[in-house]
Image (cartoon, rainbow, N blue to C red; front, side, top):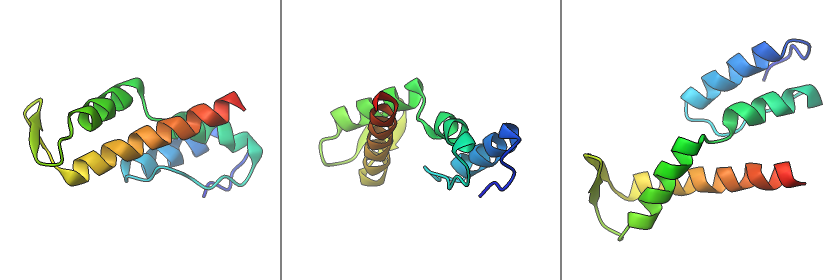
Length: 94
């Protein structure tokens, strides 16, 4: 949680750290933090494209994509990226 609500750079730094650790959400204590956190936590176009390709190529077994082994945990992670991208898209449209 970022307690300094006046400096959006602190919320951005904390959100980036959380994302590097694998978190996909962050608690906001003030509405001013929401756009910053959403910006950092929203999957990038490259991440979404990777996730779509993984999910589209999934056959229920192990496959190789771009020299990387793709198995069930990777497909699960890709599905979560797509779910997260849809959540942020829905919130932006509201």
